[in-house]
Structure formats: structure tokens, C-alpha cells
Length: 178
Image (cartoon, rainbow, N blue to C red; front, top):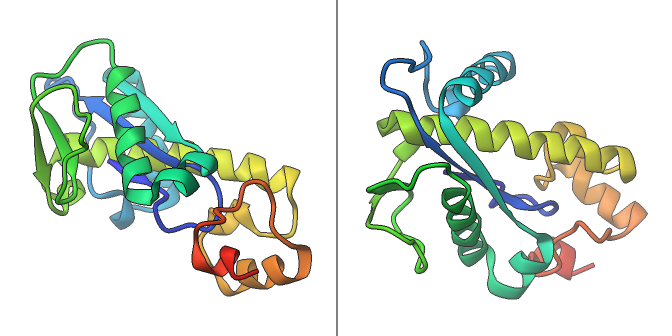
């Protein structure tokens, strides 16, 4: 699963998770249905008990190839980082990455239908949110520590007041128009 397709700033991040069937964390669910505290606790359990990896696509890659292709690139990078090669990749969404190195199955609303996709969603969200908190310290005023780069009213106003940073996606209309 990937996180960060809609923000105006920051990378798109994907995680791949192979769960240990004997150590599936209790309460594993779609990351959007969990509190931040619960997401963090579950992600820590997943990272301690599973084969997992994360992949990113940079702002430059997003702008060069489009957000869908960059998301798929991040997914392939995450899969490549696993210790073991999966027999089948379950991919959240309705399309498989072109360069998927093994058979795959697209699963619409996968984070609500597959425990491994839900686990990947939690890990990706936690790690991308941490990146955005770090970037918020380097570029104060945009609120990335609370909005994760999404186009909130305050973030769009900060773009007008402070300008575009190197971490803004120039191919996205609100940034491009500035």
C-alpha cells in the first residue's frame, strides 16, 4: 500500500509487509479507521514481527512521471527491500505496477480487505508522517507536521505567503499555478 498521493509536498511512500501468521497484531485494520496512537502501536508491532520494507518516490520523480507511476515505483522499491520474495503481491488499488517483479493482484479498498495491505498501510503512513515532521522543522510555516503536506487551507495560504519549497510538487495544480 502507498500513502501520500494527494499531498502538495513530500515523497510518496509505499510499504510492503509479509505478516507472520502466528504473530498478527490484534486490532489490525485500515489505518484511516485508527487513532494516531493506535496506528503507531500497531506499526511498531508489525515492524517487530514481520518482513517489511518501505520505498519512496521523490518529488522530482513524482513531477517527472506523474503520481500514479511514482506510487507504483515506490511499491516496487518496497517489494525489492523485503528479505524474502513474495509469491504473489497484493496491491491496494485497481492497477498493478508495470514493473511488478512477480505475479500480482489488485485489490480495491485493499487496506479494508487484506490484513497484509492494512499492515503495509500503517507502516507507510507512520514512516511518511515522520518524514513530513522532519521537513516541517526545516521549512516552518507550512504545517507539514500536522497536515502531512495535504492541501489544507493553511498550507495553501502558506504557499502564497512563503512561496514554493524544493519539497513541493510543481506538477500539482495549486503549486504549479504559483
